[in-house]
Structure formats: structure tokens, C-alpha cells
Length: 88
Image 1 (cartoon, rainbow, N blue to C red):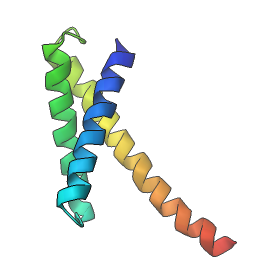
Image 2: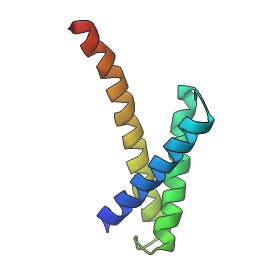
Image 3: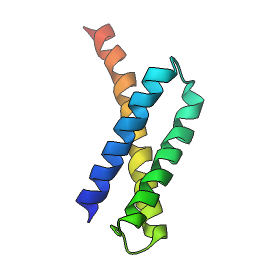
């Protein structure tokens, strides 16, 4: 079950990211958590429709945690990369 949910979240996140990059040149950083919450909600709805989680609450929590942690990881990578270039 968790693998299927993660695959759905990954697919939806990729699609939303591609749409965002294609149509919106620069999203202010303050809106990225809102975008991640929207992606988590859509993922939870899809997981509930396909009966990948026993109930909607569990699906929502799992999907929100996954999208928020992915967003945090992406921000961390962006922060670490410039520091590596400065140190070299």
C-alpha cells in the first residue's frame, strides 16, 4: 500500500511541478507550502478513490506528510548547493 501511494504522489507532484514551471515563471517561496498542500489533497482524494488507504483521514495525513517532506527536501537541496559552490 505505501508504495502505491508514494507512486501516486510522485506522479501528481511531477505533473503539478511541470505545469507550474510551464505556466508560472516564478512562484514566490511563500506559496510553495500551499502548492504542496494542494498536491497532498489531490493525492489523498485519488488514493481514496482507488482504495489504497483504509480511510480518507489516513490517506490525507500520509499524502500531506509526503508532499511537505518532499518540498522541504527540495528546499534543503537548493540551500546546500550554493554553499558547496562558495566553499570550493
